[in-house]
Structures are given as structure tokens and as C-alpha cells.
Length: 287
Image (cartoon, rainbow, N blue to C red; front, side):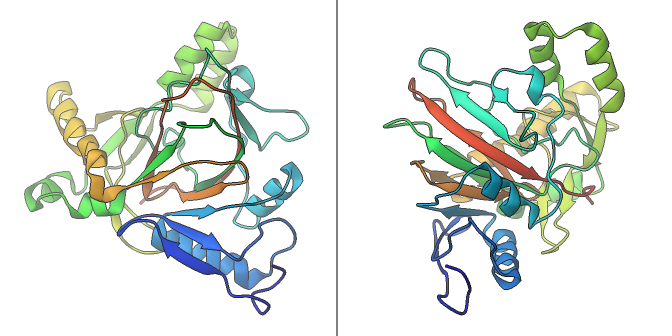
């Protein structure tokens, strides 16, 4: 499709609350501004969009991502084997799994890079090779998860802040043998970040739960026991089936998710080769 004037895209909801499959758009090439605006609008509304049968390479992937904003370069990717990058395409994270050595660590509900002062707007992940079965990705709608909280909990968390840290990456760097001086430099560049427990989406104005099981380390002002209990209670909201959607990958599938309103989980139920590539659109400070 070269223009919306030639063929209107169609959108089919994947669940009642989150996810939609888009047909009638090929993401490669110079898409018109109205197509990009429509995708942006649908992303906010449905939180994750699925595009099947896409044929494009790295140059197209990067170009498409840049239509939505500046792309991030992950500061730890070049040091960690599970996120391979190249000097020619630093914005692309290559996520590769080998038989007997599949990636773990992302099989926990999380929102990406919340340890940044300005976490990402969203990510665009494309499948190059997929297992015959398994290796799905799930997303959770954290706006609906917030809506489903009881009113006492909503009142309890209003105005609270939580700290976020990249300790899982730090341990990975240490285990990989990255020199201490490099880790200390990264510690200085990315100190603990604090964000509102309840985030308001900058476009829709909807509230969401903005803590996660990987990066959120504590609630500011609460002792450890109270903080751990509250975080566990909030993190359990991702387990509600009504907030979830699940994607079965096949080569040529692209998923674009709103990192401001979702969490995701990479299902580690396979032991086959899997090759994915991702670009990430930079975001702003949560409010």
C-alpha cells in the first residue's frame, strides 16, 4: 500500500481490551503522514498492534521507527550476548535464541527501560525466524489493570512514587566479565530513577499502573515489608486474563507496542532457533 487513498487499512481487535491486528499496510517504504498518524492513534487506543506478512530489512525497520520519534540505542546491549547489536545499526537490538541456550530474563512481566528518567514510548519487534511452536509474546493492558483495582487501593497509591533500577543488567554485565570501571561509569550515567506509581498517558489521559517485577525496587516512603507487599499486589494485576493478549509469531510478523501503558512477557517454552530484531522509540518522563 502506497497511500491510504488507495486502500483503507483494516483493524481487527484481538481481545476486548488490548491488541489489534492491522491489515492493508506494508510498513516498508515512504508511508504517507496520514498513515503514520492513524497508526499512532490506533497504538494509543489498542496498546499493541500486530502486522503480518511484512517484508522489509533493517534499513526499512529503522526508517519506520523514526517516523514516530528518535530511536534509542540501548546502553547495555553491546556488552550482553542476548542483545546483539552492530556498529552499522546501533538502534537495532538483535534477540537471538539457540537450541540449548534460549534467552531467559524477559519471561517476567515488565515495561522496558523504566530505569531511565525518560523511558521509551514503544518498541517495534519483527520476527525473522520463529520456533515451530512456542516462543509467543504476551502483553498486559496496565490501564485496564488500574481500572480493575479496588477504590481503596487506588486511593492508597495515588501520589506515590517508586524507584527503578537496572540491577538485572548490572548482574549480567558482571557475569559477562565487563570491567568494573565500565560498570561504574554506567552506574553514574543511569542512577536510580523515580516515577509515579500511577502514570497518566500523555495522549489518552488514562491512568495506568506503572511498576513492574523486573525494574521496580521499592515504593518511596514505605519500609521494605510494606513496599514489597504493595508491589506484589500491583504486579499481580498482570495475571488477570482480561488484561492480556498473546501473539503467536511467524516470520514476517511485526508487533508495535505502547510501552507507556503496557507490560510484556516473552514466553520461554521452546528450545529451537529464534531470531527477532527490535527498534525502540524514545519517550518522555512519566507523569
